[in-house]
Length: 434
Ligand SMILES: NC(=O)c1ccc[n+]([C@@H]2O[C@H](COP(=O)([O-])OP(=O)(O)OC[C@H]3O[C@@H](n4cnc5c(N)ncnc54)[C@H](O)[C@@H]3O)[C@@H](O)[C@H]2O)c1
Image (cartoon, rainbow, N blue to C red; front, side):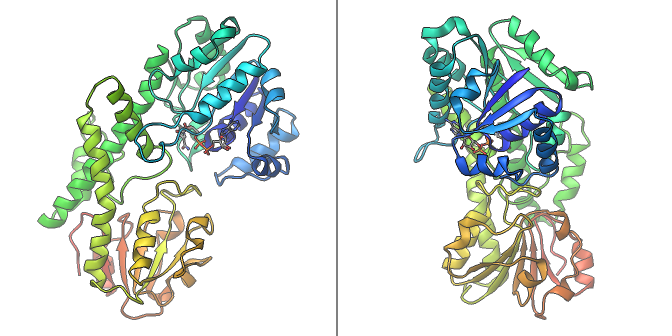
């Protein structure tokens, strides 16, 4: 099939490349020329394991192309996927749909024959109806459906190839057959193909993300209680998670949830519900609790290092919101590092995905390109992101300071082992062995 992905970011690029890999003709279009130039040069603009190889393979096979020419991309395709960003509007909890609206107007302008329009972007319930209104004057040309994306950064290719479910929302039954054909290679390998109304599909995506965010927030709050009661949060997670009605995933205590989806989608869901005069109190308190978590963790840093942080050397290992991605959106580090620097601490950080623009302007924050030079001479090492290379560090070898401490926000190490090695060690929701 001839597909067009509008928006060549984490979702548009990965799904475009993977659709090409299962035999479709795919054109990825983006308004960002630098991104498209890089791609045409064979370089991925994002860090995603396995993606470079797949881009090259499908580009050389002439199934995949990249362009900034939206007119050509739309007019030559049968199915148009909208994959643009849907961030939170500045100063509000509402979803900014301006990117979706802009590309819908482009679709209207450049379409001269029948097309299926698919929203892959996460959009509030009822957005498909709004898209339909924009396309009204050519309504015979378009079938507008929803196919929300559930891939996780860092696992995106695997998630595309083996999704738990493929959700298609449409008010016209015939669109289900086309989408079933498109996804047949994945359905044949066992992925569930789930059909519902267009609004239903839009809401499933928000409901899923809000529920996962709720699980994380729940276990993070229980970790606070564990710290006061001397209970190990990991026992609680295992004990609860063994109940198949609950399930063990997303029950690992740690920093506030971040990333490009949970923070904005929880807010987006609340604001969509507000529009229909429905008060989602559970999701509202999840948002509040998650926002408070960053303050709680900085308070713990003060407890570990004292109230005066001036000239304290702090090393961050990992600054992205999770491993195997370069995505910084809503990562806890974006609040923690500027706060600590403002208090006079000297921060060094290492992240396997490279230096971050977000910290370049902070005077006392420096990037180091390996664990050793980030940790050398540190008073405190903060393990923020669970990249594999942080899981078995010989701290005594890498930190040339006898009095250093470790604050492990991912519970990667055993408190007992650290005690045996005479390292002052703090973690989340577990009794300190110091
Ligand atoms: N990142 C994820 O893990 C993930 C997972 C599932 C769903 N989603 C959803 O998918 C959507 C896209 O997310 P993302 O992370 O890929 O965003 P992104 O910011 O990485 O990419 C969006 C791209 O769209 C481009 N763009 C914007 N307007 C355009 C236009 N009019 N024409 C052409 N290109 C345009 C931007 O330049 C950008 O490259 C969002 O709604 C998001 O919530 C994201």
